[in-house]
Length: 407
Ligand code: PEP
Ligand code: MN
Image (tube, rainbow, N blue to C red; front, side, top):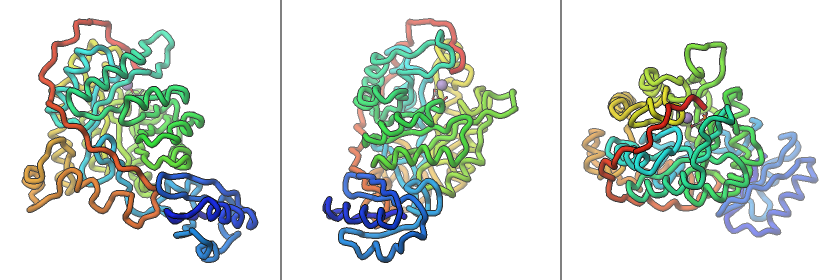
C-alpha cells in the first residue's frame, strides 16, 4: 500500500499514518520528496483498507501496488514520467541521443567531440571520468580532471553532461559537475551507491546489470526512488548470454517489458549492447522502433585510437548516419528526435504539425510528473539547458595513445 501525503501534511500527520500502518502489521517506509511525502506500507496488501487510510489527516490518496517495486510501477503512476536532465526531456515524445566517448581522454579531444555532437544532433554529452574496467591495468579514467573537462565542454557547447559515479563517497564530487549521474551495469546492485544517488536530486541513468532480470533492474530503480529522488532513467545495455559473436546481447524484449511495467523512461545503449560499431546503427534503429525513449552511444573522432571501447565507438560520419536513420524511424512512429535550438516553427515543420510548443513547453506538456495530479514524487524544477555557442572544430588531441580494449 502506498500512501501519498498532501503537500501540506505535517510531520504529525505522517507519524499518524505510519502508526496506523504499523498497527495493521505493515512496515512503513517513508520517501521524502521535495514537495510531499510518500509512505510505502510493506506487507500484506489486504491487511488494511485503503479507504480508511484515506480518511486520515494529511492523506491525499492511497494506491495499492501488487508488484515488488512500488514507486517504479505503472500501478503507482500510470502516466509516463518525463525526466528533465539538464533541460533535456527523457520520456516525452522527443527522443534524445546522448553521445560521446567511452572515456574522457583530453581537453582538445573532448571539445572536438562535443562541438561536433552539438552540431550533429546530440542532446547530451557522455564520457567516463571514473571508469569501471574489468582489468585493473586498463585505463581507469582521468578522475577529477575528467569531470573538469566535461564541465568545460558543457560550458562551450551547452550540452548537458552524463558521467558515471562508481562509489557512494564519489557522489558529491561527481554531482557537482554532472547533469546526470550514470550508474554502470557493474554497479546496478550496489545498494549503498543507489541510496547515495537517491539522496541527491540529480537525474540518474541506471544501466541494467548484464546478469540482472527486469525485475531486479526495477528494484534497483526503486532503491533510488525510495530515497526521494524521482529522476530515474533506465538504460538497457545488453546482457550476457551464450552468444559470443557480440559483446553482449541487446535485450530489446526488456525495453518493451520495462515500458509496460514502469512509468520511468527507458533508453538503450547499442554500443555496449553489441560491442561492434557495425551493429550499432541497426540496433539503434531497432531500439527506437521498439519504443525506447532515447539512446546513448559511444562516439570518437578516431575510434582506433580510443583509450577504451574503440571497437564499438562510431566515428563522426557514422554518428551522422545514425541520427538520420533513427530520425526516420522516429518519424515513422509519430515521434521525433530531440534537438537543441529547435524553435517551435522548425520543429513543427519537421513534424508536419501546424503549431508546436517550445522546448520547455514540450517538456512540461502534460506528461511531466509534477503538478499534474499524478502520484509521482514531486520533482524540483530543472533549469533549462544553458545554450552556449556551438564549439567550432577544436584541434585534435595531440595524444596518440594505443587503442583501449573493452571495459
Ligand atoms: C560505459 O557507459 O562506458 C559503461 C562502462 O557502461 P556499462 O556500465 O553499461 O558497461
Ligand atoms: Mn564504454
